[in-house]
Length: 192
Image (tube, rainbow, N blue to C red; front, side, top):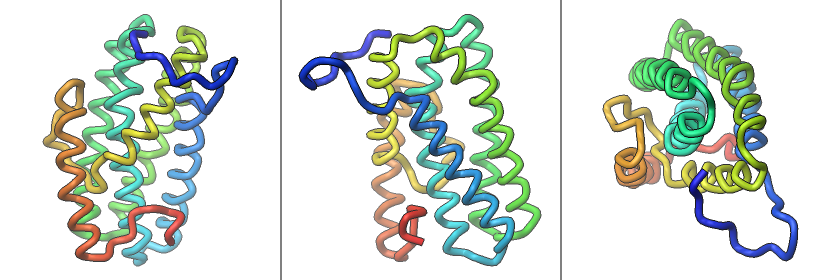
């Protein structure tokens, strides 16, 4: 993959790679969804689930899917399918944001399970086989940085492919984060 080099670290390239980052986040997202299914009236928890998923999906669109497109045989088709499913998930999140209901919560939890399973079974194992570890670490670094600059609310109408998503998502995120600050909305699981 064509990425700029990492800063020098004194020898061997180290750090969490994109597969490690995504796998850990998937585990956390599944736990949050299970908690929300068990407590469907918890608006604060619902806000965190929406924010965490919105950030996660934005970062995947910016870095994971382009990496899969470029390096995995059949990556274009895999990516298009994942983007379509993620778009539907963003629409469901948008509906959940408007009206908290047990049915919508279950729909989000089911969609997250499908998303996690698809990544774990199809995308991530092939990426590990096809991409050198140094590049996976670089993508992991960019993924984590992109999440911090990502929207905290679902925006299914924004671009889902580079370069435009890398421009639009951070701009939309500024507005989301201002709204979050004004409304004192909790957006991180660690703050629950």
